[in-house]
Image 1 (tube, rainbow, N blue to C red):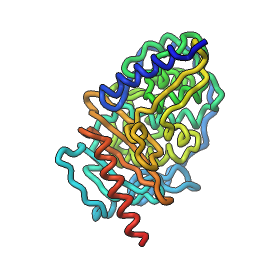
Image 2 (cartoon, rainbow, N blue to C red):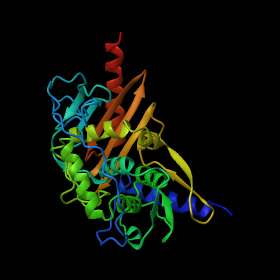
Image 3 (cartoon, helix red, strand yellow):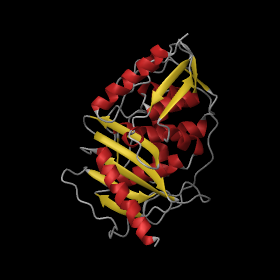
Image 4 (cartoon, rainbow, N blue to C red):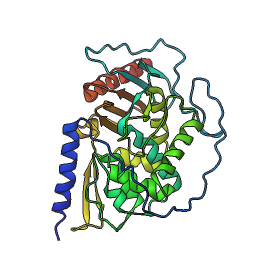
Length: 326
């Protein structure tokens, strides 16, 4: 049997997301219809204060914080229509190359899903299954769109749907599987943000569809991006331009395309990370690229043109790094 209908549905969902901005959001606020799942607690993460803001994950890992202390950034870039907030930084050292109001607190739409994916990857194995319940299918905003009610879908496939097409249905399914209810999962998201010292950050849903009380800042999101890319399982997902998955639907296959504009248009060396859009948040982008053994990340909040802004900043940043290496 042909997988063409599933591919058409996924393509239609992606097209609608692109027309909206950067592809986003959704989440059902209804009560969970799935019994709580017993989840073994993760390892304790005693906070150790880093020099420039967010904390170490634990004593054995590098700090996730970007280095905001020195305001003399090597990249000087003005935009006629700038983002409300932004940051260009070295993913490996945390050095900041360019900034615009990096601690300004703003709504973040589906950039929220970086934390959702991180918690899921910590708590659930790739071949664990999540049940597609009525609550999952009650999502709003963007979604994978073809999740079969009553079926069980692998966590890894749902993570692809979460991070590539910004599936709000996938966010709900993963939250229910990991914590038993969306409310419990959001509480864990906020607890983890506190553990990491992300003082700008508060979450209201697993997906980011709820703008009220769902916010962060560029410096916190840079730390979150570094954490996502430090997890090989997630790093492999977010750098995919497209993926074809075995899926319990007619045809047995589902094809998903990434909403990341740099991946869609083949920006050299792009390796992720996540898009976001709601009316309140505007178009948001966290992107990363690698060249010559160096990795740069960029965060853009409420940008009128996130693809162009990201290209300009990354190009300037890599030129600065190349000049430093001469």
